Image (cartoon, protein in one colour):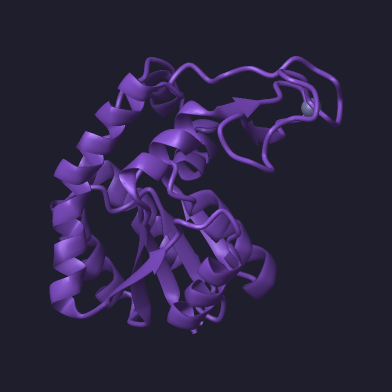
Amino acid sequence: MKNVIFLAPPAAGKGTFSDYLVKNFGYAHYSTGDILRERAKNDTELAELLRSGGLVNDDEMMRLIEDVLKNHDQNVPFILDGIPRTLQQAKKLDIILNSLGIIDIVAVYIDVDKDILVDRVVGRRICPQCHRSYNVKLEGFQPLEEGICDDCKTPLIQREDDNLESFLKRYQAFIESTYPIVSYYKEKGSLKVVSNNELSQTSAFENLRGVVK
Ligand SMILES: [Zn+2]
């Protein structure tokens, strides 16, 4: 299996795709958020930075990724999630991967129509107790009783940034910063596009399996 870099707008299904690869093909999943949280356990300065909502600078982030990949067992395929976020990071990542002899990489762009993303985000409701996720706008994903979790009967909540305005901001940021990376991988010939527009993800998973094989 190929190592995977996911490139996807917010709410496109990166989490679901990652879970699918981890569960079915034994992928290691390296998300920048997890890496930073793990590091912060032994690094009070970093912990403070994360608590205050600050951003880790490019060099530092790339150093952390390099560390993770150095210690990675190359017999196991991996997913990079949350990086690269900028074209500069993508180029640095290439240098790191080359120096470690990791060449079997595919950049997977998860393609979803913008109006579908809007429905997914604006309709999303979460159970604060068991973390089950629902969608009030999508048939088959609504709770049986309005506003109540099927499993544990807890009132559902809407996450603070699951609103149209916040979504459009994140989407625009994605287009501006990540889209040049998509072009970069396309020119290198390592970009694959997997559509995730359907509610049933059977065919999306099948396509994903095809491009990472
Ligand atoms: Zn629940």
